[in-house]
Length: 425
Ligand SMILES: NC(=O)c1ccc[n+]([C@@H]2O[C@H](COP(=O)([O-])OP(=O)(O)OC[C@H]3O[C@@H](n4cnc5c(N)ncnc54)[C@H](OP(=O)(O)O)[C@@H]3O)[C@@H](O)[C@H]2O)c1
Image (cartoon, rainbow, N blue to C red; front, side, top):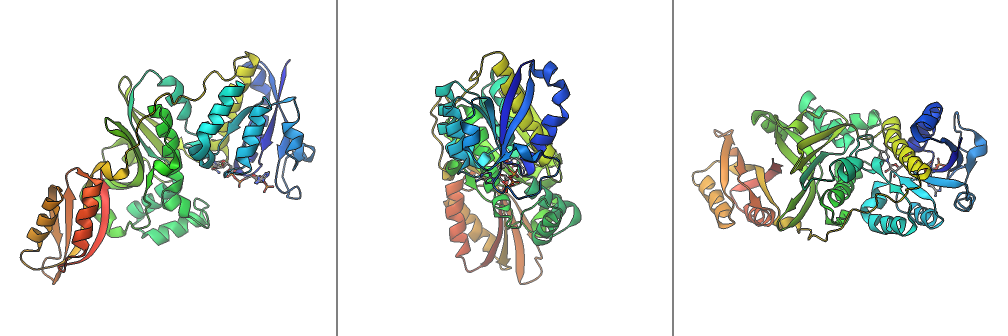
């Protein structure tokens, strides 16, 4: 029986999961692949760390032992960040190896360079785990839905923020308390910036948009706004409007170009994404043939992420057995414009504190009118006191027009505070 040898780069959360899962399934690899898989080396940073259940003879901190070993046909990069992962992947590809990676940061920024190199060398470069962890989404977009013109990809692709928003919505917690709870449970890191400010989700949106619309979108093209300004008061309004608040990754292919962003939205409770609770992730796609399709599951964690990485490893191994690596490479054959986010159109929910005087609403309406913002509905609370809380929901308006209108509103004497600005879906 043929043996296919591989190396793991990294033995942290994901690497340990991949090691366990490949060992758990070793007895069925012959039937699944037509070959045995063998982990020949594992690259780590710290050789002195205790690694329960891992054969110490496999460990090395010398990259050369892997890249110069011709027996190793697959390199699995689960180190993370940009360097040294980028250099190692490029060197592995140039040494004739196939690569599997879970590295969203790297692929969202340098995906083209890596895919072009894989194409040149005829290697497989697969990265299913880089978007939404255990949920299959890259392969469905590249293969199962390949006959579709995809117009929209919407995703809840960050489990930390979805957990926080669920706690705020269901248990009435404020943001800071929900974040603390997420940290206690290990859902949020000590420095939660990348998650709560939408940067992690932004990287996944860049990757999904590139694949869905066949045109390169990089992380810098994606507008990002996080959830740290969402308050219990906003959540209460969402409930009143039969909606939930979710941090959504939104990618659209419009006649004027690709729109890509991550931001909190008020989402109608009937939308399929509204029911995605706690740390679960989901991606909702619209294609011209398939219509609506949704993919749901675990977006992170040791074994769910290992599931996606190991699936890629098995796919590469099959391609090696059948001599067809490099079969599905870069699918960005178009060069579409990416819209500056100011050109995108959205509906808005605006909550503000205003002086309770006659004529204030008319002044606000005038500012909106001057900036081509149409008002869909107005809700006023605490109208008996000197201050009133005013909520305005707009029709679809250009982001830039809304920004200009808000700048003017914040300067108005009768408006003491614009408390929240949230897009409505
Ligand atoms: N965690 C998840 O749920 C999840 C989900 C989806 C995707 N991902 C992606 O998967 C990748 C890995 O994430 P993770 O959570 O497993 O990370 P992690 O727990 O921090 O593990 C990183 C591993 O890389 C090793 N490493 C770091 N720098 C190295 C270097 N210079 N040379 C050799 N080895 C080095 C570390 O070695 P030591 O053990 O010696 O320190 C560690 O084993 C990232 O790209 C991440 O974005 C993670």
